[in-house]
Image 1: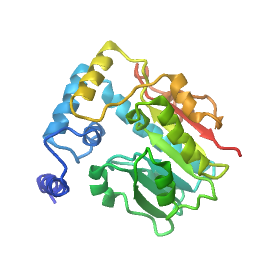
Image 2: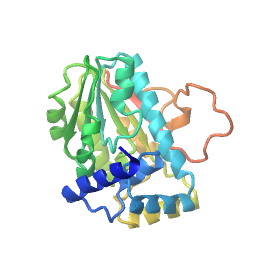
Image 3: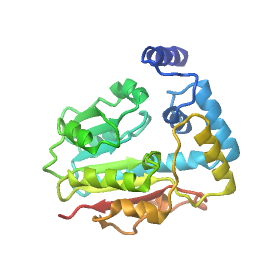
Image 4: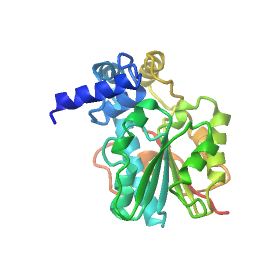
Length: 275
């Protein structure tokens, strides 16, 4: 299938699902920044406008994705065989199940999102090794009970789970509500489970602030940037692993960076539930 045919098929599916493709969508913009194909001219225009004001946003998107891969590898090496990816967004490359099952073929992965656009594309995520399993739960991040209930179709919640929030908690504007969401989900998971988070930092430049303001006002879902202390709160009651909440390239780097790191990075951390 040519790229043009693929594009029109995507457009037809989204139109049939009642999705307005004339308005920029945060998931499609993120997909564009990551080099994906599931986006439209309106998304590319919004993404390009952001990049013109703050070119570093592409680094932020890619570093968040890079930390997802590193955290899944870390959790798999720590013995985790079940993964709950909340706010998965559109599939691109190196999705959670691909990374996890590439290390542990029997890994079981559940994706969670409540975006009709993501639901439309979920068939791409619902692949698995013969030994493992992959599922998609349509649930709101604000409803941890529904997430856990849906996850139980595929995961054994009496055994440890790796819970991930990659670049999504900023969509919950209220700090107390965001912290409560994380806590309630971790409360439903067995001891030995892990929590991995990467999220936008509020240590930003004037250009980044302007780009984010234009983004928030341009029709996409607003995103709240937080300090390291605010992100650290999400790990309350858990054993926060060294080096704590840090710029993502500083979280147990696998290789020595070549050249200076980007000036603005997402914050990242991983913690373990001990009892």
